[in-house]
Amino acid sequence: MKLKHSEAFRIMPYKCPKCGFVEYIWNSRDGLTPFSIKCIKKGCDSLADHVFPHVMNKDEEFTRLAPRNIDRYFVTMSWRQARSIAKDRIQNAVEYGYLDPQIDYVETIEKLTESIYGEGHAPCIIPAEQYKSTVH
Ligand SMILES: [Zn+2]
Image (cartoon, rainbow, N blue to C red; front, side, top):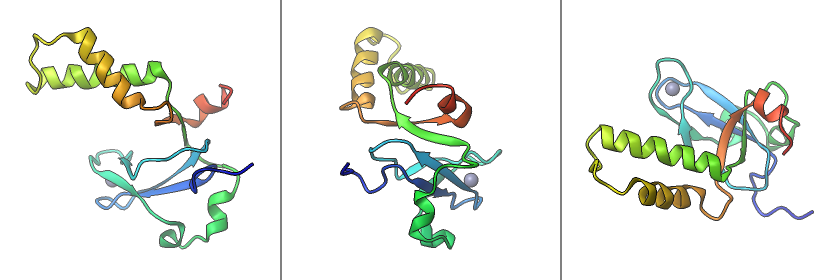
């Protein structure tokens, strides 16, 4: 099977420039992954950037190893997850005064959900336990 994306079925390292924390996430699909993700180190509010294996003193083969001791997985986002993210963002935007509380919620949520979901290939991160308990 020919893969479309070079990061398909690989370990993706992310390094936080602020606290130095490194997280390895398994990309469980032939799809793109984000350039940056939220750093999960407690107390850190920075974004962690994708780094290439050699930056972590790992060779290219390392990224192809089956995921062991990996805490989180990239999966393809469902419409429901996109909708939940859209709802949260809109709620926050209203709360912080970036959006008028008089907006048409149904329409705004629908449009943002479509934008987040994209063509149905958007990545989302789930914990390993959730990944292992569902069929992908
Ligand atoms: Zn950090």
